[in-house]
Amino acid sequence: MKLLNFGSMNIDYVYKVEHFVRKGETISSEYLNVFSGGKGLNQSIALARAGEEVYHAGAIGNEGEFLLEVLKRAGVDTGCITVLGEVQTGHAIIQNDSEGDNCIILFGGANQRISKEQVERVLSGFCAGDFVVLQNEISELGYIISRAHEIGMTIVLNPSPMDHKVLELPLNLVNYFLVNEVEAASLAETSGESDEEVLVKLAVKFPDAKIVMTLGEKGSLYWEGQQIYRQEAVRAEAVDTTAAGDTYTGYFISGIMRDDKIEDVLHRASVASAIAVTRPGAASSIPERKEVEEIVKNKREGR
Image (cartoon, rainbow, N blue to C red; front, side):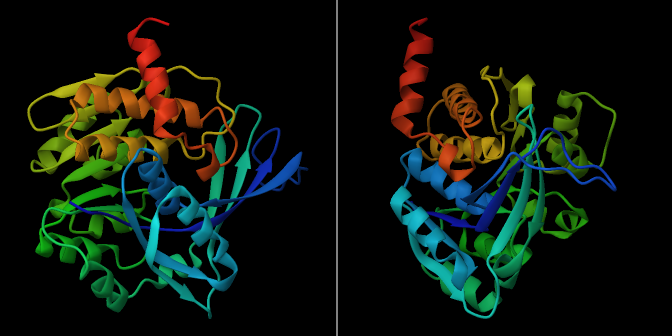
């Protein structure tokens, strides 16, 4: 069983601010940090640090070649990445406020130059039973889903950033959805209901899919076709929440691929995510499996 992440790669420009800039306002930042990022890259690194062998596919511009080294150092296979000389690498402008929250402006760049030819070239190396992980930051997403389904791959979709185009994708082919509260409500086309009610509506809409719904400080929910599992949040003092969801995603998928008990999968993913928010940056904040397992062990022993 092989694991492919067909996803975005960005250069993240992170500005530390007292509060998010408002309309017509000019503010100063305490500092600027430049990190590797993109939901795809972050999730590939999370998967690798969770102990999985992962192949990353995507596209960058010439100035983004350092991202290849970041992935390689994490143990990710970069052989499916295309370097496009005529376009810029995708990038993000991130404001990180005094509470540790963030807001993000994305520029797609090379992430939006994925072609059907590249998709065919990449997927030719995978077969039925392999996993493919996707996010909503690259072009030809619908084509990838359709072709991966035809091959017989298990499709995992994190539809972030959520927009109206997601609803036009062949979502009935997705095997696992990983969504937050806002994304879940948008997919279920509902509002003003409890988390469990939204999850049930989403399950009715996509009866063949398993669904993870992350709830921030309220933890997470999981639907696997018969019942809802709830995982309480692991408390941590947040410094930067940028890669929290991507860390959760990586560790969740790792647990599913290892066929671990779902309660253990959800708990381990929550611990990993809690560690990530205590550190600045995106990819740089994602913990190694050894660190996560040590905390899981200590919690079991009551330490």
